[in-house]
Image 1 (cartoon, rainbow, N blue to C red):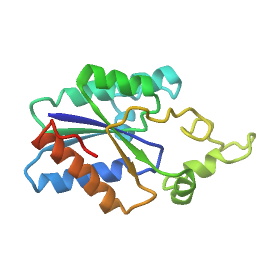
Image 2 (image 1 turned 45 degrees about the vertical axis):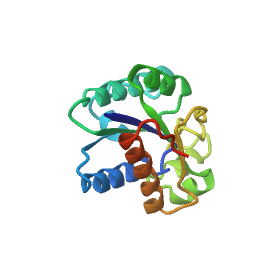
Image 3 (image 1 turned 180 degrees about the vertical axis):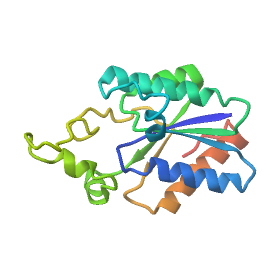
Image 4 (image 1 turned 180 degrees about the horizontal axis):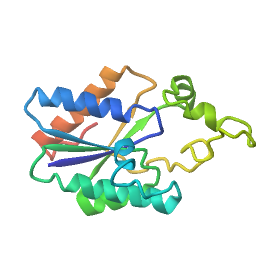
Length: 181
């Protein structure tokens, strides 16, 4: 079984790529489970705030949830912002998780702004709708220092990005001794 933690800012494409991989690899008879950070924030992690300690606990819980699928899925993908390198490394050490950085330039994220978060984060400080904890804008995001793969979604289509992630997964599943370059 392979557990992958996607990390990247809001709107970079983590959920889109996860769903693409699940559909494509499903056609190849590989079972894929998606642990989506947004969905789990409403259930397993509903008691957590956006403080650093709670964000770290959120990722630990997602890692534990992913691990519970050991033996019943071929691949589990944790699709969450996952902002702190220390917790990404913790999941790697504890569960053997592979890290994939879904990188996207801030200009493209602002242009996409699918959830309206970047617009709210850029509002004046005293504005009642100001978002003060948007990761990568006005809250911390540690650039991944030890990733197994980087996908630059601002430089390629979602299909190209999804195929890149699928290739990484299938190479790893088929031969763990072959590094992905």
